[in-house]
Amino acid sequence: MADVTAHRDYYDVLGVARDADEKAIKDAFRSLAMKYHPDRNKAPDAEERFKEIAEAYAILSDPKKRAEYDARGFSGVSGFSPEDLFAGIDFGDLFGDMDFGFDMGGGLFDRLFRSHHRAGPARGQDLEVHLSVPLQRVYHGGKETVRYRRPVACPRCKGSRAEPGSTARSCKKCGGTGRLVTTRQEQKEQGSIRFQRVTICPDCGGSGTFIEKPCSQCHGAGTVDKQESLEINVPAGAEDGMALRVPQHGLPSTEESGAPGDLYVVVRSAPDPRFERLGADLWRAETIEVADAVLGTRLKAPTLDGDVEVKVPPGTQPDSILRLKGEGLPVFGREHRGDINLRIAVHIPEQPSKRERALYEQLRKLAK
Image (cartoon, rainbow, N blue to C red; front, side, top):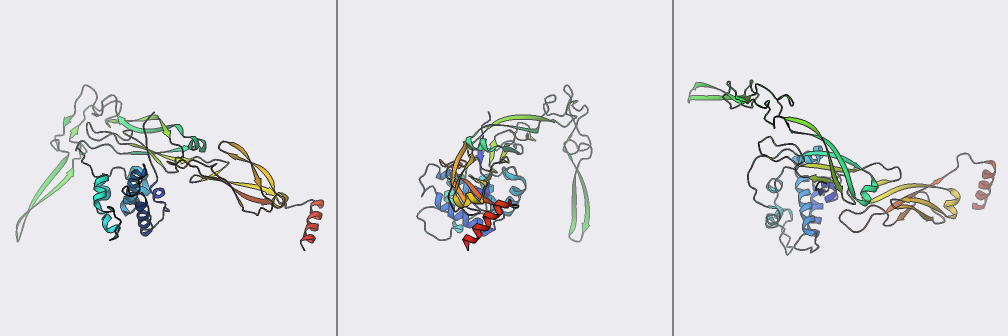
């Protein structure tokens, strides 16, 4: 089973709507950053929550990064280093001149986020797939199988694009550079000016090499599509839109010895005929008769642990909410659960029988 790291939806992290404006995003960040500042909040998970909040703000406060996230999800913004994320954000200015008694400026972010990375071959691009998970799995957590396709290095040519036993030769037209450079010189009043035009070599397509015998399996592409199946662990209470990162299961690197990208599995709750999910709460409509609304009754309602009996009090009004506390989904990363909310509808007979009509007439007279 693959190791995964959970990434919550950035809008959920800040608690803002997907159409939130710049001010709403900034206000949400300021409030949450104050609450979870690691120098102020000594809870074991405070520092990780603070990092999560800061990362969400860095993405959503930047129009370009936000557009990429909205369009492509986590895979659209996964390649940023801390320097890329936080460049241009003046956290000291963001919090103004307020004296908190602890660091809210760049020093804190240097301490938490900055690191020195060793240069090396470029890693492959990240890949994002969606996984529909039943509520029962979200409730208990556990294993789910993800099936997806991705290009991998051709097993026959090992990514060289050439048939085994043959070699690629340098392109004669561009001399192996993959580019063609044309130069012209013009005489101007200020002197001789030299112009250069660089174009992609049409013979080799910019690769610099020519494959005389393309690999018979990948036809010279160097990669083949492969159907893969991966077992991952869905955490209890996984939120809608949560991304589970599986390292090095994304697209292969375009450079030799470069590591593959990561796979992001975005969890979505599968439709359930019994409930509608809103966060950790579950909602369900229950319909009762007029007499039961007036006099009270008991009804059997489903939960994710089986049916329970619910008391409907006398005088229950249409659209009343009966709350089954703690019977909803686990709250991710917390020890408590949401609720099941029963919205009560009252059935009004459309074609009452003769006797029913007579009884309703009597009730109307009594009401007057």
